[in-house]
Length: 140
Image (tube, rainbow, N blue to C red):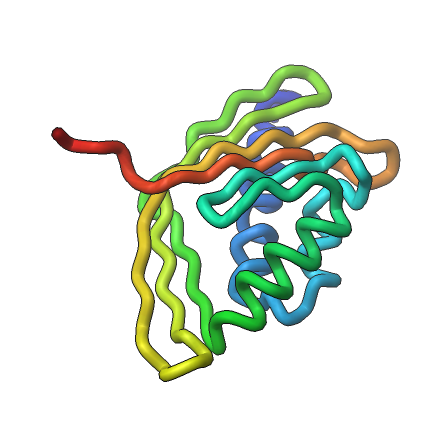
């Protein structure tokens, strides 16, 4: 297996770890295993732009995901497209998110697309340094 193939497999495993970190957003230690726990990480999402691991953990994982939803399920709707560039990699994928609102118990379903940037960190392997997600592409 080539270095490119190994990096692609490692990235698929990291995407699965990321997916599980959303499902179990009340356990930020799971997210800390996939993200680069550093001030330069960033996350652009429809509710904001988090800069640094502390903001991502507090504003996205705790406030948006864990406090807002009692259950969460994130699924990729196809194979991710993966590009490896030496010690960096980019993943692109479409997703579906289903969750139950804590207040009122209504179900929320959304879909979208996401790009993720990973950088190889000494002793940690590939770590997520940037996410940008948005809704589905406009059809009209």
